[in-house]
Every structure is written in structure tokens, then in C-alpha cells.
Amino acid sequence: MSLRSLYTFIHFKLLRSLQKIYLTLLLLGWFLTVFGQETKDTLAKRNRIFGVPIVFFAPETDWGFGAAGIYTFRLKGESLQSNPSQLQLGFAYTLNKQILLYLPYQLFKNEERLKIYGELGYYLYTYQFFGVGNATREEDLEFYDVNFPRIRLNVLKQVYPNIFIGGRYWLDDFKIQKVEEGGFLDQENITGSQGGFLSGLGAVGNYDTRDNIFFPTKGIFAEIVAFQNGKFVGSDFNFSKLYIDISSFWNFGEQVLATNFYGEFTKGEVPFNQLSLLGGPKRMRGFFEGRFRDHHFVSWQGEYRFPLFWKWLRGVAFVGVGEVAGTFSDFELANFKFNYGTGLRILVNQKEKVYIRLDAGFGENTSGFYITIGEAF
Picture 1 (cartoon, rainbow, N blue to C red):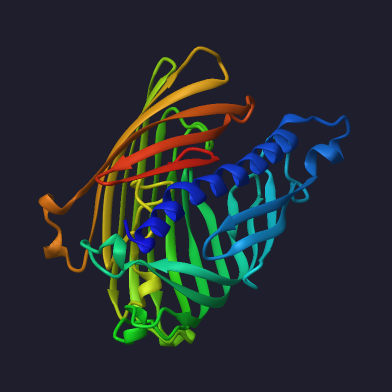
Picture 2: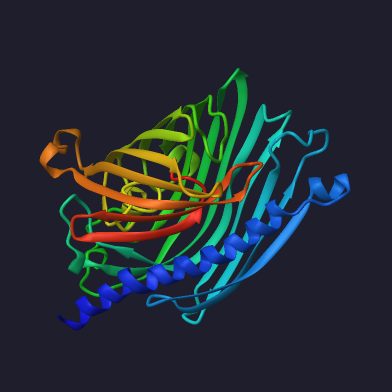
């Protein structure tokens, strides 16, 4: 085995898993504190603040240190039965002089008939790139350094029971500072390899009949987004995206069958960092997120969720298929990737049905281990 192959193996199979495990244990402590404790006065129930330190290690970052915190509250006039609004703040600094600063937010108003969510952030970080297409190789892995602020804003209003309509604005000022010499991005023939300003507007529609947003046992969640990134809003690139996300849930006593279809389709002058990605903790588990990327991506996954020995413990088995393609005609049944896996769910908040998710996913010559909060879909 070459030194590069050994490095890649350690990076993907060991260090990434250790990092995810450590960070998620910190999140587990946060959830047990935020959701597991009840205070006596109403104000304390409406407003909570919690923070944790963060320590992690990865080859492209060296050691990193920081903190993460969350502030949960209800806006004036909202009842205690409504979903709480929340602000999350995270900060990290690495010994390679990298910075992550992010503020995801979710606000509910008028008893959840108006919802505003998104993210503010600043990133000075190192990312991974394997090339574009459905047949990229692991040995083509390269790293690149990037510096960008981020704005994500979604505003949706209920127009009919279970139906929300609204708009989306996204901004990334993507500045690539360093690429690997002789790599794909160094050849300058990949759109976006020199960075660029991204700004776009879109329309969002939601249909939601789930009985619980954290652990649904019946109902449907469907979202469709039509998004345009263009010079009319200051972008350096002109491209459009269409997202389709549909999840369905059926229960048979304590057992739940869940399915999800996801499609992401892009057209136009699409920079490589905005292409559709296969893999990650939510779709095609077992594949590294971004292991394959291209203009279009479709996936289907099914989960069987069932109780185990104790009320606070559940099991999951899942399968999925997915593929990226440059054009619609490039989608071929023989090229679809297949994944499968199993997992455990640990209950940390019985009232809201919040679970810690532990999944082991597998695909052809690949695997991944995930520990996070909430279901994959």
C-alpha cells in the first residue's frame, strides 16, 4: 500500500469516525441538558441557553478548538405548546489557521403559521474534491482551501392547512485560496475553480402532515424548491436548481416503515461546489458526502424502524440507491450505486421523541459510521 493510499484509509476510516463520535457525544450532552431538564418558572421554560466546548482532529485541519451553543426561546405571544425558536452559534479555530463561524437559526411565529430559517456563517476551511462524474476514483482525492461568508434565508407562510409557500435567498462569496498543484482544480477548466460570488433567489413550497417532526410515524413531508442563481442578483454565475424531497411514513403498531425520494437537478453555468452531491449522513449513507458529484442526482431510500428491548432503544434497517449524472440521458440503471445498513436509536427526550441516531452504512468498497441527532429523513 502506498503512503497516499495509507493516508486516505486512515483519514476516511478512522479519524473521521473519531471526530464524529466525539462531536456527537458533546451534542448528546447538550440535548440531555436542554431537553431533559424542566425548570419551575415559565420564563425559564421559554428561554434556555446551553454551550459546550469542541475539540477535534483531521489531517487537513490538525487540531481544532472551539465552542458551540444554543439559545431556545419563544417569540412574544407564542404559546408553550408551539415549537420553540432557536439560535445556534458555533465557532472553531484549527492549528492550520482555519476558522468556522456559523449561526443557524429557526424562528416560529403565529403558532407556527410563519417560519423563518437559515444560516449566517463565515468559513476559512479545507475541503475535499474527487472530480466530477459518476466514475471518479478515490486516488484522485485532492484538498482545497476556501474562504467565504454565507447567508441562508427562507421565509414561509401557511396558506392552507399543512401547506406553506415562501421564498429563499442564498449567498456565498467563494474565494479559493489554495489548490493542489497539478490537480483537477489547478487545471482551471472546472467551472468555479477560481472561486466566485454566488447569489440566488428561489421559491419554496412545503406540504407537511407528519404527526411529529423529530420521529414521524405517519404522514407525508414534501418540499419542492425552484432556485435561480444569476447576475440579476449579483452572482458571477448563471444557473438554476430544482429540488424535490418527498418522505412518507406508515406505522404498524410500534413499527414504522419510511421511504424517501430526493432529486436535485441543475442547469447552466454551475460551479463545482454547487453541483449535486451523493453521500453523507442523510442520503446514500456509507458514501462520503461529495464522493460523487455532477449536475443531477436522484436517490431513493427505505427504512424499517422497530422497537427493541427497552422503551428508550429502537433499531433501524435501511437500503438505498442513487446516482449522479451530467445529463438526464446519462442516468443508467447499471450505474446506480447501492447502499444498505443498520442502526440504533437512543431516546433522549420522551415528550418530543428526540433520538440520537447511530448508523453504519455500506456500499461497494465503502462504508461510513454516523452519530447525529434526529432521523435521516
